[in-house]
Amino acid sequence: MVQTQPAEPTTSVSDELGVVFAGTTGGLLTHDALSAAVLLVTSVAVASTDTASGAALTVIDADGAAHAVAATDAVAERLQETQSSAGAGPGLTAWAGRTTARSDDLRHEDRWPQWSPTAVELRVLSVMSAPIVAGDEVLGAICLYSHQAAVFGDREEQLLTLLAAQAAFLLKNDRVAEQAGRVSQRVRAALRRRDVINRATGILMSRDTVPADMAFARLVGIAERDGKPVHEVASKVVATVSRQTRR
Image 1 (cartoon, rainbow, N blue to C red):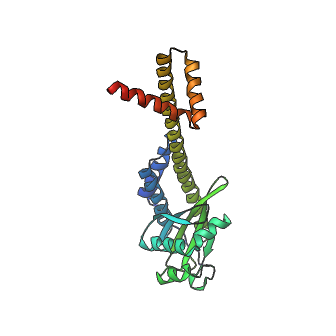
Image 2: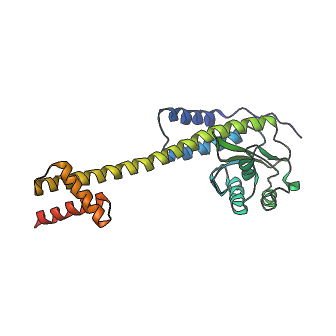
Image 3: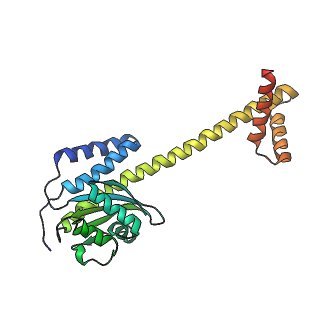
């Protein structure tokens, strides 16, 4: 196998990536910042070696479906799309095995019978892919491509593994933000329901001249009788009073 000496990462791209990662220490990334950071990860992968011609990052769901989220060029994007449609490729192999997948000459590669011919047609002869692992979860894979055969070795594998770890941090960050958003929505909905119940309780206290616990017990009793949630009964009480007030 031909060994190559990768060039040092270009200062501008590396500096930009450093700024993005530094910015995550104070909070969650926005969607736009995440997209920019993931694209920078693939750019660094290419800029850090003399032999790579492109790179792409793919997120893979629990069912094994691949979704390309960043690519350095049209060829890399096409290869990721082909992998997604074929259901097989170096990224999926790295993801399934939780280890680096590599091919020194795709002209003689039979592991991916649909993907490899497309790569050769696009003049891509070598590929290396590393899984993106966050704890016990494999989130996807990052792939590095070259128009030359047998050019990726241990140094490129170390580089790609490092970048995959950084990508894992970014993607996990995004999932935490998404989960936090869902929790926030549930909390807001619960607070709205509580507010409606409190208003309805106050209406019954005033109308029936009863204490708060008895007014609330009446709401619960109506809900049990009608087979409805308490907040729906409370909403009906509030809406009825609102209509009467407008008359």
